[in-house]
Amino acid sequence: MALLRMDTLLKEARRNQVALGAFECWDSLNVQGIALAAARTGSPVIFQTTSMEYAPIGGPEIMADMVDFYVRKYSIDAALHLDHGANIKEVEECLRAGYTSVMLDASMKCFEENVSLTKDAADLAHGFNASLEAELGHVGGGDGGVGSESVLTEPKEAAEFVARTDVDCLAVAIGTVHGEYRGKPELRLDRLAEIAQTVKNPLVLHGGSGTPPELLQKAIALGIAKINICTDINKAFLNAIEETRKELSPSLAGNFYRPVVQKMSEKVESLIRLFRREGC
Ligand SMILES: [Zn+2]
Image (cartoon, rainbow, N blue to C red):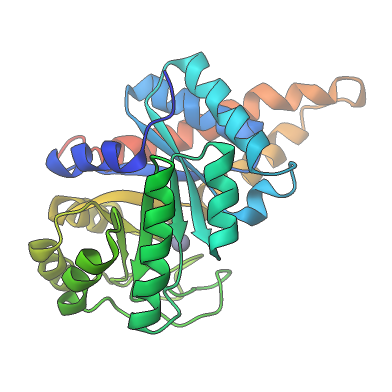
């Protein structure tokens, strides 16, 4: 198995009215846990990293090699995606490292500037036979997330944005937040339905963590094909380390590895099954 373009996997997901989980990666423990969950469920999966996540381990090349290794080891279908690429330099370094998808996030810019930057990034990504994700509107931060305020996606602008930029996958702002919700999560599913009527590309939901399962499943039925999960697996990871820590002795500190991978994979597996709308 090799890494595939993300839009190839997501187009099929949208056709089937399911979504793929896109899980944040930072080391071999969670990469292996995610790969194991994908193998157990027989589902494709998206590995994704921001530059803050690949920098500490030595750069995007190491991340790409590591993900590629586990994709082959477990014979799964997967894509490797740059999450929230801040500029064209980051986008290019990930494409050169072997990422099969990138995001250029110009969602804080005005509409015309977002169009222009996204178009340049799309041309670059397609030259590497990779796909591009961009965001229209802006998914802001809840508690513990980035501090910016959300701006909901305008359905009327969405179709124009996609046509003018050649973007493959569109991230929409419909009420989710990065980090933890401050209050009760409320999604503007009416707005999502309007966007999905005119944009047939796979739609992406950032800030999936902490969103009630029934709301996620309704969003998937309306066209969301990728759900980003960061905080939920960060918490699973830290809890697993804390639990395992109690059972370790200094002479066998490496024994934390297998239990943490196992606990990570259980969390990821439950989310993959939710996004496939099992039981609906
Ligand atoms: Zn995000």
